[in-house]
Length: 103
Image (cartoon, one colour):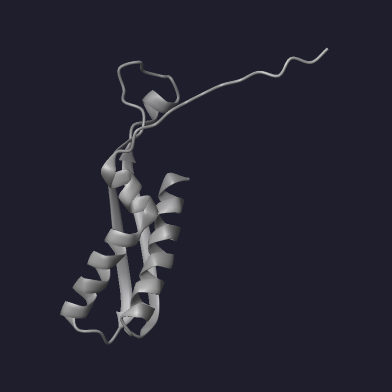
């Protein structure tokens, strides 16, 4: 789900940035993949980490844009993609719980 959210956010951001920069795109494929040890997630090994160790984001663009325009497009997509920036900045997380007692 995390990788799907990252790819979706990056794709929407890429499209918005391309429109703002007036870079015509015929198509774009956004692929997110990563390395995760499922032994930790599934509770098979208490020593195995839980979560992704590495995440890779790849764009395949069908455009006549110059290499400089593509570099700018990717740089700005990274900058303005909320999911990318959230993962990149390691935000503080807070967890709370409450209970509603019913009779």
